[in-house]
Length: 247
Ligand SMILES: NC(=O)C1=CN([C@@H]2O[C@H](COP(=O)(O)OP(=O)(O)OC[C@H]3O[C@@H](n4cnc5c(N)ncnc54)[C@H](OP(=O)(O)O)[C@@H]3O)[C@@H](O)[C@H]2O)C=CC1
Ligand SMILES: O=C(O)C1=N[C@H](C(=O)O)C[C@H](O)C1
Image 1 (tube, rainbow, N blue to C red):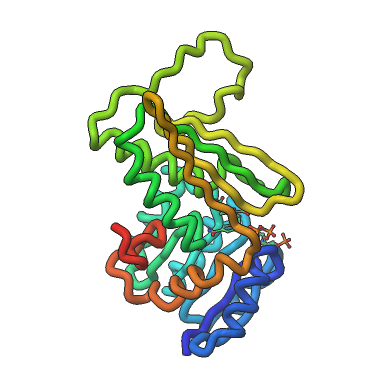
Image 2 (image 1 turned 120 degrees about the vertical axis):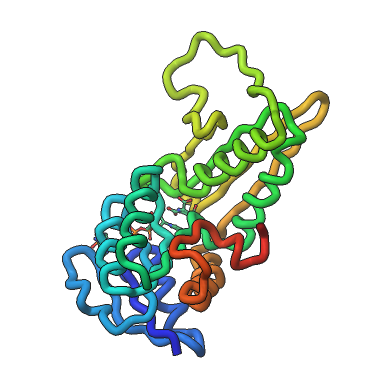
């Protein structure tokens, strides 16, 4: 049995994780921790799953790594500075492994993979992400990662800069620039998590769309992470792709 703790246990995602861990035959739920709770409650866990807040996750990870507890992290909002700090912590405290996935939906991971494959064949690519209005970070972790994958694939293929004649712009009208890829974030009541990647070249466009219909859809990916994290080759793994044989 894998002993699992949950940070953010009462949240939208954390409560699904608690149910999934309690429902799986090979995992045992140790305890949940929310804002203000004592993290000592998860001592004894093999793995802690974190779905908290971009402002809280680094402190949680610092504690877990110091305790040698593996972490499966869904919380978003990681930038280069946070990733560098995380790598430093893992170097200083060998033992704990961290799996950081901006999206645990298997179809969402496939969407990112297909976007990477398509990117070199199109002159233009822009991303539209649509989420519920309670989301703290924009653009989403998934959109940021997709933009980075698309940008890297375009660079590897020697693609020219995307055409864009805009010279007069109301700030924000062209979205955020992530590694040269424009990302547009919508916050819409009634939605959960959705994304479109729009590719265009002369006379043809291609749109790849993913929709999360509920939060249970993320749980097979989270459980896969819980089962695999201890055996991952590197201290820090970003994305579920290597666990799905997608690299
Ligand atoms: N990777 C993926 O597949 C997915 C990632 N996410 C990401 O997960 C994160 C959480 O999303 P969501 O569940 O919707 O958010 P919620 O606001 O519903 O839940 C967050 C939970 O974290 C708790 N929390 C806040 N700070 C701490 C802390 N320092 N220690 C422990 N618990 C804390 C909150 O407690 P309290 O309310 O008491 O403050 C709350 O219970 C976001 O970054 C989101 O983008 C979401 C969906 C899928
Ligand atoms: O906050 C959410 O809800 C989600 N967050 C993740 C992200 O930022 O990409 C994953 C999914 O989009 C849901």
